[in-house]
Image (cartoon, one colour):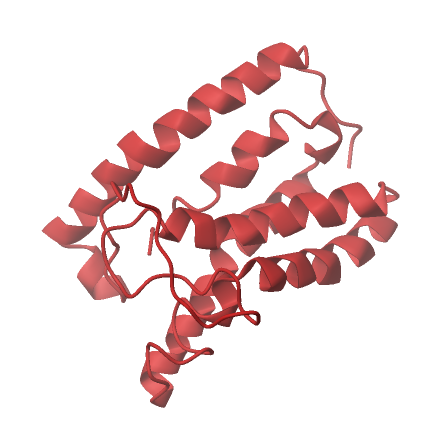
Length: 179
């Protein structure tokens, strides 16, 4: 898995192309949803096998889960903010679904159940340049964690910054309405 610090890079870059999504509550929700699928790691402590459909990188990393989570959070949030419900839900769904796609670029684990429930097959992208992050806070603050952050800076944050900057230029840096 990529670290929880880096998963938000994807929705933040996307928001640079979508001025109406640049509202603090929407951005915070997107950042949280982009990291949320890794809550399935709790299963390790509960005895859930890694390769089980509900194990780590299983159903919570699927496109369907991302779509459902985006709708579940996005629709009520859009109503509260008086924002376009479909746009907010779609943006938050993309944020949540991006998690599995980012994890498919890591060099460890057994793959991602991206197409669950249609198949339990675990998949990766052919190119996997991001160092897989250790599980647990203590393990993260080691040399391994530094290596993970360095690979994420190169392969995730740098492209996200470039894509985001292009988005801001293309949209004329229009700001969203105040929250």
